Length: 179
Image (tube, rainbow, N blue to C red; front, side, top):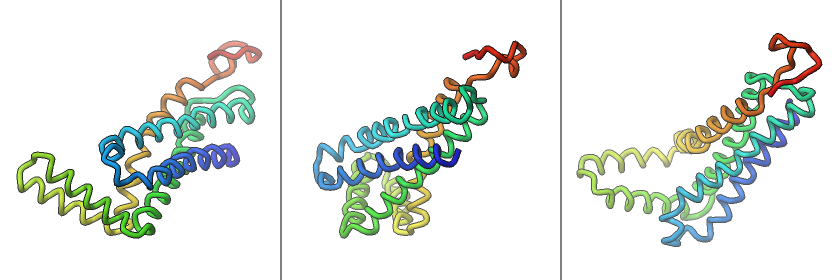
């Protein structure tokens, strides 16, 4: 299981990290700023498709064509964890390692909060919360929460779709397999 999980987790996380760094030259673009969430979450969904392929690979190559929902979920969630950790590492490198990127990001966030139309008290509360992003551990935890739920949903769907039991496990003859 280790090889499958590592292979698919590293590829999935690598895709997200490469896409994150690929958009870096365009961070000052108004178009990218207005579409960054769409691009980011689309990239996440596409990279987390490797969870499906990882579970399928495990089922076919290691499970002999069968896999329970629990084992499929375990394989998928481990791929998701590895991928999400790589996403966090890439973000931390960008935020704290690239000169002025963190400051530009905070300036963009502050402008977004101020333009949201919220009450002055709500704006001040949000601005106070943004200060926590300067702590690398809190920043990492908040960053982890972005991709992980997406991966969890894809893991649950993939595990449900790909589970296969032998007939012996479901009460039939062991020679046949059901979907």
